[in-house]
Image (cartoon, rainbow, N blue to C red; front, side, top):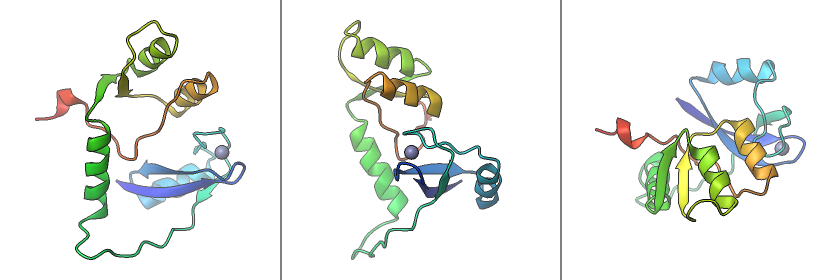
Length: 133
Ligand SMILES: [Zn+2]
């Protein structure tokens, strides 16, 4: 797996997308298959890499990102494929307010955002608890 920082040419938003390989990105990009998760534009290109200064004693950046995400999700409940329904129910006041995370397609996330449901993409793919040994 490889992660690219991508930038939307329409809205200027930057976001990260995971690909199996670098050529995967090239193929999907050429086929117009990569959508901006914020506005749905397919005018998406690799973002200029922000300079990352090595910090003294810094560990693997991916490990630090994973740790940050784990911290973020400590108080969040995994709801898997029920994410969209659960997020909508909480937003509508039909379910107890709580922080949840789960699976959503880019189109689903976009539609939630359009309806005013606060959603944010996670920096890393989450392993569902049922698959953690
Ligand atoms: Zn955009």
